[in-house]
Length: 223
Image (cartoon, one colour):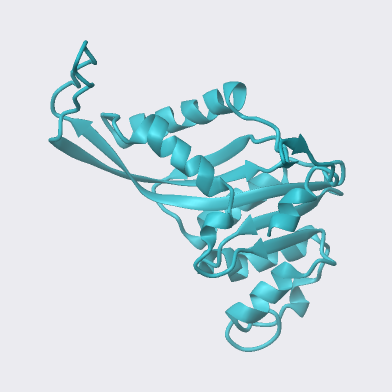
């Protein structure tokens, strides 16, 4: 996984390297009273009682080279939602661009819909994929994952080892989102939550995103 990240800069003219994951169950909590601001000798105090307005799911990608983030926010995280997100992401680059996609082993990431999308994008006849649960590439999770990992394809998936999803760099950005926006905020509705997450993504990309760099003993490494 680290080799994928390290080679991202050298390959950036022909290959996009992105980390993808979902953040589910983001709660739109509205505090029943305003927070009390920080004062000399006192920290900011946040109301502990709240009203629940529902949840949202964020599907997001992190560009390993540029440090920029993109995402979609909706009520659900289904196979169709993920395929739609992935299709939109792939359309952001030229048709000849290669993709290296880092994600965990969630069933949605190895689904029939994802395999069919990658096949279409790579010019592979879907009729050769077989049938889910019966034969061919679509038969099992393992066969679908092997197809998606095939490095001869223009779009290649790199699945993090089990119990090591922290190797996915989008997880770092999710922690930033929680600390900077979600943890102490108050939202009046799910629409308010969605709007503020979208505005935070825009703010992050304009002011906080940094190009990816490898260093050793304080010196930059060339890929």
